[in-house]
Image (cartoon, rainbow over all chains, first blue to last red; front, top):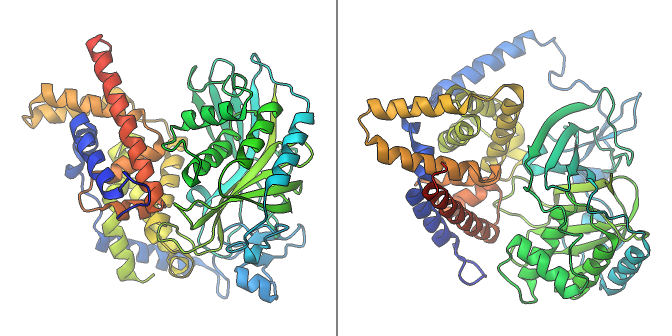
Length: 365
Length: 174
């Protein structure tokens, strides 16, 4: 396997990592008593699964659909058929999306069906507009406050169900970053997306029916809570801080640097409250980077008006990253990662949403 | 996906999934349960796997990760000390040079525990000589470039953690 980036070859990196794991004891730790453990042979497993299935079939009512409990109605349009989306009409509720992956949003300069090859437009004007909007937004940053960010997201890794009739339920995650660097995160199961891929409420939905999934607490000092507050004011200073934090291998202008920066913005925005002055600088910084395009206006997954900025990294042309921003406040409101070309490393066929995040709340407490 | 394809998928992945689950759950039986439950779900989805899924391996490892997460949520973790004691007991009874091996395993454990869960999955897959770089990239759902960058970063991280461990050892901490 070879790579465009000089010095980074997957086979060589793999061999080096294996050697390092051997010399540092990681392999010994992982393999220690592994071989002694007997796992079920495939023949036994398949026989057992078949027997269980036969038993389940026997208790299903005759004529029943078995797995399908909700009456469904095929959306009879060609577009829906192409998208592989089935819409279930429930008399007591708004139709929800029924598909393996979330519906792709329609952007001003890239309709969902053209998301794979829509070029987008020059982003300069949009980025300057966002920078100015952010500058107008009142800053409430405080070194002694808790940063509270609520997101709703879905990803292939965590939520994918290959059943084309499955509902798409994002995970709602509430994050708190404390001034001493402690980080607390609580996740809940969200409600299914609507047929247009939207329906995430801005108010959050923590009520008695919300199913708690998980809680994680990272200790004091695990995060630099002042990361954005202490950030320099210049474009170059902000860029340097973002690249250093992610240990980006490339500092010169180009595709790799844009990849590092867009990835950073996407990842940091779901944990930190980004002060408006920093956000303004980030948009101006992106205007200097290679490969950013504007996809224009869009209604995001909460139904908010947003503008979309797109980047397709040459190193992974199968994916299109889209950053979503509020045109009024200049704040980041979400991101989408879309599979646009067949990839041996993705479990789905393009075009498809690989993951998305909607930032529902981002403020100091 | 037919029975033969499913069997092949199981044979390719079950040991890696077990190894990953065991490091996350610190319990052999629970890890065996993870393998069993993961492939039960995959069996139920086998029709859709044929039509909807491009990489069944990536999909099944994805299910495995979710099952592990659920296990962690559903039960109290197996106490770490008891786990380690049981391991050391096995080493002693097997006549292994315990002093040297224990230091090695402890260092490996310390490093492993400080990696992120996704990096832990990557290093679990690395332990199989039968998996090539392209196989691991596919299972993790990464492009070859992204995989190379990721491996490079994990390598640097392990190196850094190993040095920290040595420094702490010299200071008498671990």
